[in-house]
Length: 500
Image (tube, rainbow, N blue to C red):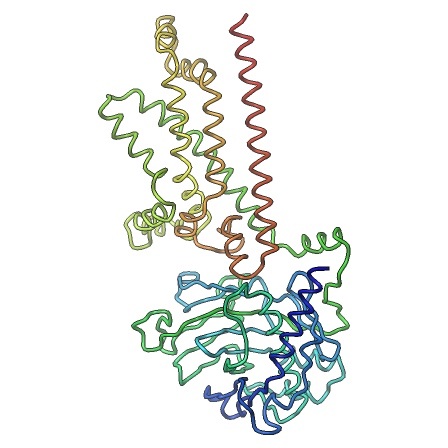
């Protein structure tokens, strides 16, 4: 009920905002040359020019509860799968610098918008729009879009004006709902429109590329200087402030993409069916591998550190413990400096065909480094608390050091070792800073649940962020409960043996 009231209020406000006149889109020649001057603003446009003459009732737009789909009864199409990307990445993609890149997802999008400074560039797939409008009986509009093969859109046809106006209105409504208080599309923002997947804005010296499959199965929208320069560099001649990006797909009413309100169970099932589950599998694989490595290395390091001279113990203990007191971002940065592509170690991994940085093994390495001290400290403390005379007695009976370790030290120290395992697991499960530095944010490869929570929230997908937060809390609770029950059972067994 509250969500319906909020949606109604927001659509009324947007309707008032869109009632302000909108000035003209660029002419065909201007758009083709990258000198488009089209924009919508709070100034009065010439009579009958541009979008100002297109009747759009923004108040009739309905947005589904997930904020991904929108419909309006008077519109020739609806919008589905809307996503707002608040942040992108300026790192090379697949080893090649493509500019500042926003990840769209695993599929192309019919509509892409990039907000830069006080203007935005809007890409529309002319062929897709032609198909949608033809389905709805808008034959003239379909032909106008089908003819837009050179990147220019003629808006002399009032139907074309109307269609573009509806797309802008949809984006305004959806973007306002996903902005979370940050900058969003509104009056006064200049808008350049193109139907080409590569668009040069010559005045600004920028090149916009849409629907680019830089990595197989992953599509990007990127912004780079026409000369290939970094637009985020303040010293660059084409410096620009990149604000955010919006992506969505058009759909005809016949396809029924709008998610109508259903009961809670139905809505949750729809949410789960549309959810990208790759962060869960990446997290489980990463954490499971990391905790197995940490368990073995932590026990061996603790056992070894007690067998060396006391002065050497202090140095070794400091080295093994320091990742615990360093901020995770510092750990990630140090690992990047030591293992980066420009270092001998990093180059060796590349030469042997096993690039380490920005790969899944990098997520494991980051988790191991930050969680290792917890396992090591717990194991060492447990071993130090064991009565030394008991160990000496075992040696006088002829027990080997290996037998003493497995048959005596591990059983006696198991409760503390189990606690250290839980702490190390929790630390590896929640690792964010070092992983992002060393492995990056690649969907299905290095995007763990903590990274997914951050980027989904930044992109306005609060429901997805809340879901992954609940998952990681529940999973942590179950693992801790299992370890505690197992530890208690082991302690009871040991007490029965001692009593006997």
